[in-house]
Length: 534
Image (cartoon, rainbow, N blue to C red):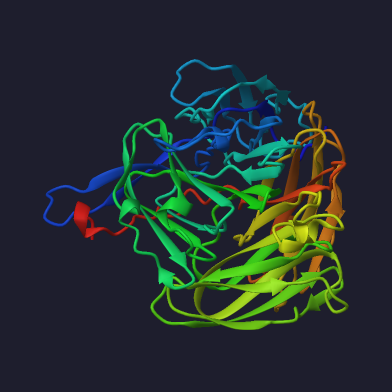
């Protein structure tokens, strides 16, 4: 076992639940005006909780209908311990339950050890669980003992995958399970006829969360009073149908803002083109507003097409330019520039052509005002492009699928990514936008589903290019270790997923999350005069 692979825990589980991974909490003082003493918030910064929602179609608001998935829903989780001397314990269990399905020790490797088999070395393990029904799975990494001195925090990842080969929800749906947050941008979904978009809010904490759901559409911010003051009870899930909250809003972007507490938020989007299934996928948190956004994981193939979706959260319109990166460099789509009004959402179409051949791309969005961004790609076979049109009447039309990709934050240091279940192939995509500076060196280690790491291999990144790496079968996790390079160079990544099917392949995209955060980084607090925080 290579000495650089530290205490890996791989936990694939078939789910009806969510996964959370928690490390030692860090206290942060927040002053309340007029208060004699500061209010202390206990926040986890080294390894935040990760929450997988479980089968989303089995969740619905009061009066809403549920749909039973026609295929398995699995959750894979991975934890990678750093160097140090602490022994921590990872426990897998259902949200809201004190009982654990499995408990596994994570023993960190002492700094300077050349082998994971050295005294006090790492421990690897695999646990598999099959659950039924709606609900969440929770994975807790116990805090390090107070007298220990771990040098680096634990890296964590959780991945939920649903493969449905038939029915209205036919498709491959995958999401990198999010951590709890007090502000989340979700760029995806739709509210047109034939679309169903579920907003899934999960609160794994011990106190209720009070939040607002703000929907941005083609005409700007949607007046949706039903999205204000939503309460998510402690240890519970709440679901909203976005198409009922903001009908016919055009392309949408959703901002979830917690006044108190924190939640894990995601979307589940399903589309019917007439009577033909058009695909299903999850939408996860996008990078916060910025003038540059990077969206990896676009897999274009005719007759399918795609679009880059951009929303402007501010009070001034933005001029937006989009370029696409592949292994050869930069490409410009047919329409590369658009203007997005303040508060509104627009899409820039991507169509396979002579200038934009089929392949995998990373979209780089540049704007003169802060924006949020995501992208959608559709997939079908010949004849499927007429689904939902008058030409389809009286014909058997093949189904399609769709995949949502989110703008990502740069990855740095050591990152672990849980792998999809057997039957779903994966390809790693890493992109470096053009700019000054040297990209970091990257070492890739594939970990088998048994928990055994393979030999590390080196990857070479180039500025202004995208690198694609096909991954092997029977994987439990992927570990990336980034070293050196200029601090001004950003590396963005995603997994593109594909499942074979006689009616046409099914696709999804999963963004890479940043590595363990700096324990000294201050937590964010949402300003809200209604609760007395300024």
